[in-house]
Length: 300
Image (cartoon, rainbow, N blue to C red):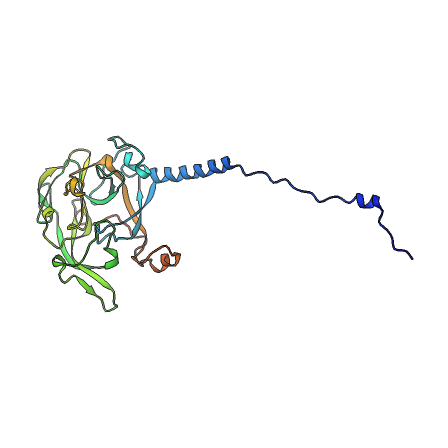
């Protein structure tokens, strides 16, 4: 018996494999999509909220070096300082303007340094008279209460900022640098509970005499606020001249870029480029802490 043979006709009828055409990548469409997404992010950061990083110790003990927080852009309206990356020219205009409240923690763009942001607390409003005597605020002729509270213990990695290192050593810090039984090094600093006229209450640090503890009375102009750091001996704020990296007096509300709301997370000094360090260097107990001042019902 002979094996069946496949004829040439049958072989030629077998369909050849199909080759699908691959459409070329439309790079212009991809770029437009990426640009649109970037524009939405910038608009959100400029109009709604933006992340912020704490690089200095000027707001201790309430903000540590390494804290990451959210700043809302709409509470006081919008202005040139609201825009991300400070791309708009400095100006006096404001859209839907509102005045901060006593105790608000705000973001300020200092004059002469448009690429920087400062974070400070509002302690005087437009029309207020403010003076300082031995570190105590005198607001409209009345002393702002400062109640002595137990010293606060701050980890050393939370005070060593990139911009203004807080040393916790030397004559001004005698006895403050300590090692806990756990082996952790801390700085134990005298603290006070300050309460403003609306009942806003928060902790401040004040451990030494320095030139900016005393200031003659001034009146805060309309459209301005007077701001100070909670770490009173180590803050370049409204008390400090511009040429000493301060704010040079009351701050125009047109230079206020938003209000600090809450801490999202905090990293200690061990965090580096290794992603594993992002977990090992995460500080416990800092996430989701509100930055709105406590309101003392007795003084509201």
